[in-house]
Amino acid sequence: MSAPDPRPLAGITVVDLTRILAGPYCTLVLANLGARVIKVEQPGFGDFARGIGPFVGGKSLYFAALNYDKESIALDLKREADRALFDELLGAADVLVENFRPGAMARLGYAWDTVHARWPRLVYGAASGFGQTGPLRTRPAYDMVVQAMGGVLSLTGPRGGPPARVGISIGDIAAGLFLAVGIQSALVKRARTGEGSLVDVAMLDCQLAILENALTAHLATGVVPGPLGTRHPNIAPFQVFEAGDGERLVICAGHDDVFERVCAALGAPGLAADPRFRTTDSRRMHVDALESELVTLLRARSAAEWLRILGEANVPCAPVNTVADAVRMPQVAARHMVVEIDDPKIGRLGVAGNPIKMSGVPERESRRPPPDLDADRAAILARLRRG
Image 1 (tube, rainbow, N blue to C red):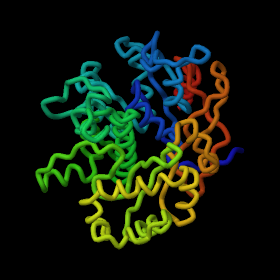
Image 2: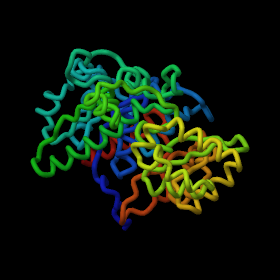
Image 3: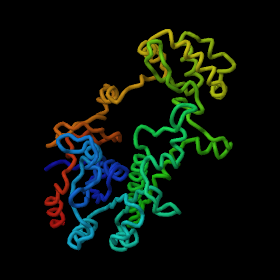
Image 4: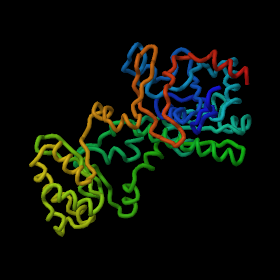
């Protein structure tokens, strides 16, 4: 007899109606935590992400990165027979997740009120561009739309330059993470009350939620923040610098004592006593002068030499890695943050590991490959019949 799954969501079944990124990212988090995720897809083409390249062995790597460890069944919710199967799935599930525009599920007959009346214990997670309420609720949205509307684009890019998109889809990913947190909170609430909840997450809301102090500082002072390149708006030095060999490194001095160590490591201990740079706030106010001083000092050695010296001085610092550098770091390997899956079409598929490490939950030896469309129909239906 096999040992029980120690992951915290083992035994939880998720019916996943999501597509592209925000919703699938949420359900991937739930799958990594042990949930059984049944991906319900449109017959014929499935999740639109299946058509997004690049492709290996005819299979989308975009889709694969977000949908391993899930099962797939194709159902047309406009057909009566498929609706009956979908109803059976909901009756056996703990969670339903969808990321359609508000109103789409109601047109299919699966609005929250309807679902809750039929399956009162079911947790219903909904991600959309603007949420289930408000004047923009029915508008379409993509990552770039909410990055722009939420102010993130205005904070990103070079000083004095045009706005820039964050290099990953932070609009979708933030929404997926908040939705996963909300769903798990609703499961905790259900354990106490016996009732499921609607978890309504808007991509735009999530962009406001991750603005950090930019939102609060603006509301308190009226100052409109703008892009600062790699600088931190309140702390200095806290940015990318160029060393004498032209390579770049990051130096972050979050406290006065760290700044003193930076100055000593760079061979200029007296710089920490300069009235312009003595405190965190004075360095913020004289950041241009401070940057000029540090740029001059850093020309004396290569980035690798400075990283060694600063590291020995216990200064937070880092090389500016490419993705190729990052995925091959020994620290990444030690934390199992790149894992491989045997996929029958792709071959050895490398994906990001689970960043949530928990006591009593060992790293998994194997994972399910991303499913072909409708690949798990027989197994899903057999399990439904067994109850």
